[in-house]
Length: 454
Ligand code: UD1
Ligand code: CA
Image: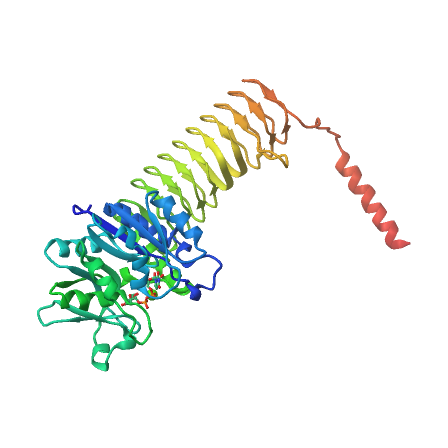
């Protein structure tokens, strides 16, 4: 949490042409959350007093996504992409009195950590007028170089295109994240020009101007991985991989077992209890919470589901949004659960579809049971009472109710409510014909022989 009032300006106006996408770049997801969402979650967690998001023309969806995460965010239009200083200038209405310190973030840098933002505001609190998040680049190509004095002060940032060969040899690079003490950014913004190789208004020029005004600028460093900027789909995949690796490690440190962590996929909001066991190839989409001691066996796919302590899921299970799995429930292979509550101790161990319904405590859903929830127009509810037993290969045609403790004979198509404690059976009676098989075989063998002979 920041103590000084802080305004965070998020730049998201770039077209992102290298994504080759109809979707604006910053709306592409990492771990099930848009890159903009990641940046705004960081801003929110940081306790910024104001959040301003700069978007380009035709990016209404970006503004809407911003408001979804920070309802009070102000959205500013940068009409033309004339550089990062011009983008920040679009947010000038909120940079006036009371804006406090200003942090500028890029919306395409989803791995940035809160500790780095704290480092920057810490530098401001310690007296710096500006602070820049830098990193030692393995390959500095394309980045702005941080030019420092022998005492470590930051004197200027030189964009690659404008750098001399000596400056290009510098490996300390600009991540793009910059912090300015109250009033400093406003005072230099109008003086930033575009007399450079790209003809753009560079926000990075603010540093030399602040120093010329007698201000002091500092560098705060972070690991290079954190600053990964996503410009194309390969970098998007790289960001995903880095995010997943970090999150898996955190989960294991918090008491989750993964036999093959590199094959387990988590989401930005995944909640995992202690002693959860995630077997190989488990995919967890957004909106999943898993309680203590749950075992999710191999090749299961979960999204929008809550799973209470002690439940066993999979292998090959599919939990879709609205699946509420209570304590000690078993959901076995090739079972799909959607918008349905399975109450404590109930079981569906094989090959079933449980959609739009309730399975009461301790009830057993036999193999091949289908909740026929959809009539082509509406979704209807199936209610299976506590302790009921639904025999294999039954179709429960919703809306329908199976009373507590009732039995449904296997193979039944149930269209009417079943009373508590009753047996419901819907299939033709079995016939028995003693000796039939032998007579049949003899007849068939004779026919075949006659056909060959003729
Ligand atoms: C920028 C930095 C560079 C740094 C690098 C880190 C400047 C001048 N350069 O360069 O020092 O090493 O990031 O990745 O700041 N944007 C707008 N409007 C614009 C231009 C950009 O909103 O008119 C947004 C983009 O959407 C993007 C961010 O600003 O989120 C950075 O712009 P980009 O053009 O990618 O800057 P770089 O050339 O990568
Ligand atoms: Ca960039």
